[in-house]
Length: 484
Ligand SMILES: *Cc1c(COP(=O)(O)O)cnc(C)c1O
Image (cartoon, rainbow, N blue to C red; front, top):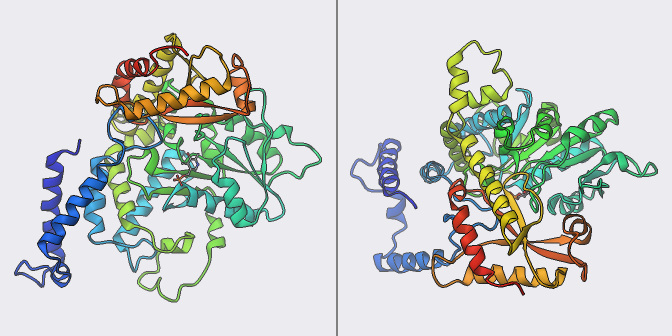
């Protein structure tokens, strides 16, 4: 999977880079490694050990890994990351990561353009979506200290946890008949939230919550809106392709804050989340002095607008490099809705055919629809719902048709897929536990003999999944060779 030429290229670039930065030692010696000598045998032993330990992971890079929300970074990202981390810049301040901080600001500008937020929006990378959401919830608390934050029952579990960290109440929004959050149903005796969190792409079922209905309500009631698009945010790129429902995404650009994880659908290795704020004046909440840093430049140091101190400059560099390759200007141009106005036909043409993140997202989405159709046609499985992005959920058909029978068989299929001896039969899936209210709505055909039901789940976040669906169905059928 890892192309040889990338590695050769990487080592060559690294040698060039080091000699450029290290003009004093012309004899080729390396002060750093020379000062930390390691006997050759020890190194080889440890390395063999390392390779063995690494090989015990699941094969995340193969299409037959169709389980959790895990995606191998693009070689471009790991190439840039590995080069950069040998310099190890720190994007806390321009003192520690001068060029990498400017690259982070450029990458953030591209993410801002991708969402359609106004140009002056303030943002930065974080070590994860959880920390990015923590920052958004913290700003929400500072803006409305007397009012709760509201989240839907399907919101990521960390919102409740961060409410505890912030010692701020988090209320659960009522839902409509379709299980989607509807703040208009909040009990009038209850105080209105100061901020509602809307998830565009829930982690479990991959649902896109109705931002287009919630935002007008929120504006009428002077409630702020934070969008958790940690997983789903990049799907905004294919809003107008007819592959997904464009309505919720049309309001994306009008919200108060957005979280997107480049380490989910943005081809990055872990350690790369992002938070964006529409109103740059929220920067005031971050105000602090640092006795150690902020001395080399009068420009904004990212540590001045970020809760974390040290942050990996390499993560910013990897994202910057990847976006140069996969988020062409033409795509951003088209998204900004200027397509008709653009006089330059070549830009519009390029936008229509641009390769990059939109194609990757479109293929993941098509894979999900293809799997859904195949499950519908199967007599051994039934889909739980039509996927809204690239997460597909389904159940094995059972004789007794009950929550307990389905849960048990789901567990058996998960295990069999992982433990299969031959590589042609292996299939890595994940499972999801649906509580009674979701289960009663989505799976009314089942007998509710316990509180929850466990279903099969695949996040089809590799574009290669598109061609893999027939093979995946073959594997699924052999894992479920009889109805029992
Ligand atoms: C993954 C996810 C998070 C948490 O992000 P991490 O990067 O794993 O910390 C938050 N919200 C949603 C909707 C997610 O899918």
